[in-house]
Length: 168
Image (cartoon, rainbow, N blue to C red; front, side):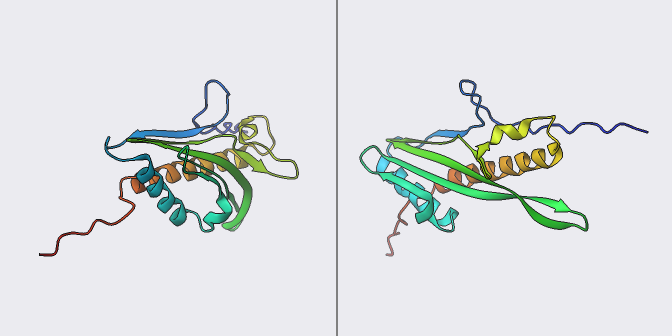
């Protein structure tokens, strides 16, 4: 009888100081872009990205140019007969900060929602009975966060107000 090869955990970005799975992005833009304009672009993005942005955004600080939020999503697993079922609910906080000509976002402190919430990092345990399902949830989470960052990066390149062209 052949032994099954143990599953390999996905490679996830980890903060070297805290050991937490952390997704972050810093970007320098045109130096003339104000923090106010960058914040307006991010606001436009989150209003499109999240189905219920008012439930997600917890703070909009126009003095310190910061947007904080808490959001969630579900991961799924495949059952016999190719039936897609919900697996784990993932909740994450994020912070976006803006300065003249640059912006950044950080997502860390990611939790699995359960009777007693626990850190996403717990799913990395190779000895857990649900290791295959856990690694699948981690892979789905990684895809979600990378798609979120890609979406935000693209949106931050678009002016918050459409520029009118001279119609001569």
